[in-house]
Length: 266
Image (cartoon, rainbow, N blue to C red; front, top):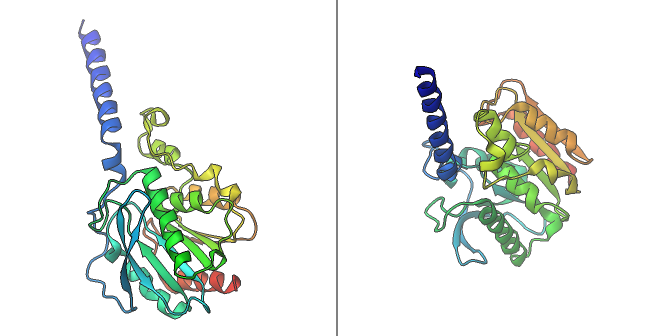
């Protein structure tokens, strides 16, 4: 009788844990208010702009226009946590790369209206591409740079397009695989709403690709970055760091890899 009670209790706990995981999964995936960096000061000039989506959400973005006719333009798609300010330590380095950039904030982030979802973020990114084209930036002069969760959005919108290049920082193969690595005892494939199946899409990207990943990443396993590199079409390049974790260090080696990749696109 005791054993039966114990088994029933375990089953009940597992059922409610699974139910909670399903109900609150987007709260576990998207963290708009989380801050990873503090006190960084902008050393590059930016203009705050609003980008309208097809479902009438105005997205905050930072735009740096050095010369759209002379230099490539990076569309920077950030990860699942924090605000635009959390990327200041990265975009400051763009100043000496002879590059324009548009740093986009997702729906539900940085004070934007709406709730983040997979399809919503795809729409946000496509709206940013349309906005850049309206500014006079040609598609073949746009480099789409995805960070972490942003790599899943990047692989979606870069399929069968003529972008200058694609940069994937700390990419995952799919959210199903990433979820399984974190919650191995739960039926993630059945529960997950936002799947971001990048491994099925990377083969449809014809633009040159740079993949960056740290071997010490404790959020997205390093093997996923290696797998995405393996699945990528040529020309492809990698920057794999032995000591970096998920938030990669923008040191001289990484910055030099970015510069070399951008230079190769000219």
